[in-house]
Length: 479
Image 1 (cartoon, one colour):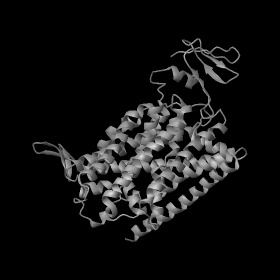
Image 2: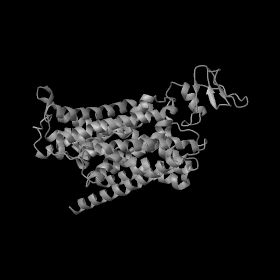
Image 3: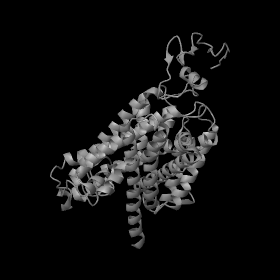
Image 4: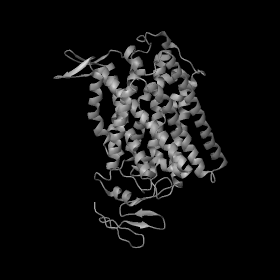
């Protein structure tokens, strides 16, 4: 789409949209068909963003509100969904109350990031690292960069491992041979996964990630449905051999902190929100999208956690898929039989887990690449995915492959520490701290107390998650 920018004071015109002009008094673009507003929670409208709003081609594909909600849910809801029942087992039924409280707190901390953008200079990209720079200078910038990159890179590695392990379970053991070349099933999976991973991470914008996000959200919904059906067909737990499945607690104070840690990490991922907001057609609606997304995640988590715990009780394992595969109302159920070919519910569950993990990797890689590109060119007034992003995403994925291969069997224990600490820092502590620094002069006493309370809660979560995971890692090393 070609443009002509005519200087008449400060009133640029768009070719093909001659009725479009800039209202200096109100600070808005006004057109024959629409008015592009600049609200308190939306960025200043740049020339590029204005062009994108009229462009339906490959360059200006912006995501709708519905697409934004789907992408947010897909970014947050990964394989951690499978551990919700275990969290309820550790903390007891009070974990449902804790989940509601944590969901509200983290939804609010997500809004703090958006509200803090009001204090940023309009000459820089409204990104999380640049918000850190505005609030706390170079220290704030690097706090965000280090914590966010560690969180998302570690999560990418974990998702890769889960994809590989899930697919490997479906293949025959031993070696796969093609002519004279033979590979172990693990090597074949790792090499083959590259074919489906690269096209996904090269998708240029979040709006075009929606199809992958839909598959990820559907996988999570189907996994939850399988758990519900498992209980529905076996209400008396006759298929569950472990007698502890009948044991349920209202509160387990000893293990409640660990349960809370699982819930907290499951609702962390705020570093990706600025990227999604910048990719919206109507960024002023982002707060509404956050409300819908976090409420949807609460319902999904509450259903998976409560039904898993109600059915498997004290026998609930770290991943509920282990319960489904070993002893449940649907274990071994044959969904399709074609001659000697049988497809069981166990295999379908395994595929769903792989799809859930796979669908999360492109979004994680997208955010990591954008953080890096924003760090390099943080003086830019807008960010539009280009060749630098595509190259960065490819390099990030290659590094994630290397780390995941080298740490195939031990990454989980270390990532539980790094991921927990970084997730809480990026999603709770830093948003509260930045908002306080930027708004402390104008906040009411009540709001100031609330934000300070969130900072304190973030520190407590950090210390608790780090201490618990270090103790568990120490026990693993001793064994």
